Image 1 (tube, rainbow, N blue to C red):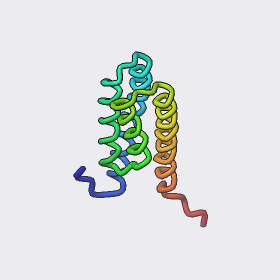
Image 2: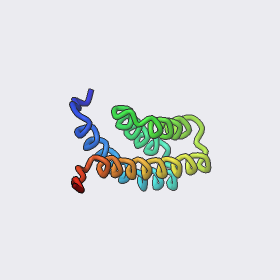
Image 3: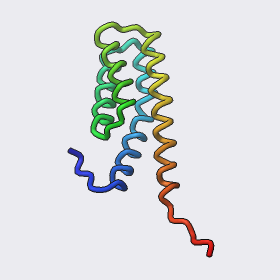
Image 4: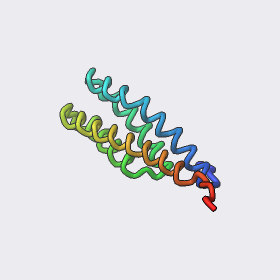
Length: 111
């Protein structure tokens, strides 16, 4: 349990986690380039755990798929595509989190 009591707290925590995901994307790519599947698995495990806590299902699914592939059947081409999809999804979530903030900004009454 995260101890999040409000939508605002959830959004703040989600933004922090998404920012952390951004720092991990180059690390994922570097691990793949080095064929360091153990490091890649560890990174994906951390990403999946953080995403699961916030119910970011698309990130959970993609990071879980990378984790399984890296542990069981390392296929660099497939893993590279999954990482690409994960990067796109993280960018999408970041955009959405900004939109939520814009939608909750009080507007001036024109009257």
